[in-house]
Image (cartoon, rainbow, N blue to C red; front, top):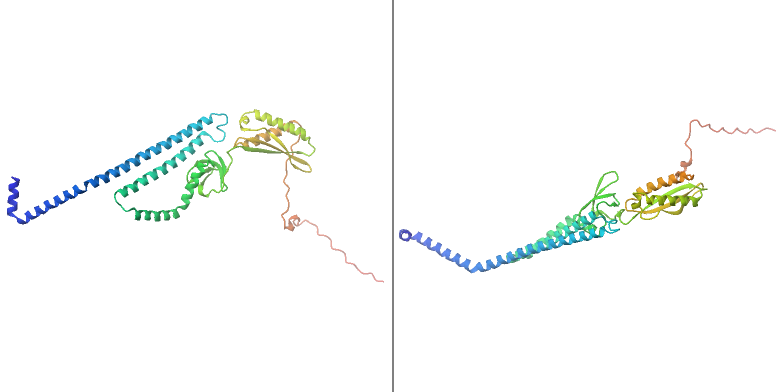
Length: 347
């Protein structure tokens, strides 16, 4: 039936016959083009599939390897912490945060490198010229680098601060422009809690120096001012005995990392002398130890009959101001009498 219909259509319209013939020729040409190129398409598609599959597998493997490495570091830190002095310098939470931050940076860098390389290889498989793209990316990277140089500086400074373990959460630091307790360490900004409760936001790239008061150990120093005629040997014995008793009491038995030592005289005056007392303490506990040590020394010396003198600051006039030592004029002051005139006596 269809053949008869096509025959009738051809016999009825020569123009329609030519169009059908042209369509058939186009279909045959398209089929031949597909037949000639399908092998190249299949090879390109297979190559792209392999590139993407290898990139995904490699990225997953690298991320898992980094995760296991971080977990192993944490387990090693926990094992060391169970020893006698393992938890004094850096606590487990700080080590965990530091390792997680380093792992996050390494995972991000590895993902960027692997996926970026895979993307360039896919573009190369599609026979796209990468030279203009790389040139444009280079120019754009330079422009972005100039515009975001502060951000890059902050990021790199944060990475090295975390890797070098300059400070961590819970440390008391002095950053020059601000000081306080670290409450958050980021790759760009560090947050500090000040003495009055304020929060300081410090850009890592602007921090030129850091004084960490929570690493290693601290020093508690107390100056005891006594009278000039005090028996210093007896005062030394009393202070030493007070330090030994304090080292046995809680919680100072853990906060004191060394004996309370009497270093000697730091100042000698006309009416009093200053005895210097010092002790090595746990990081961040020096202020509390100093207050308690002053309290105990004062009570012990009072009980022994040794008087503790109070230091009084001496006010000195400013240099270059001659009027500083002159009393201000008063309305009640009596003016000095004028000298009587000398009258010459005649002969």
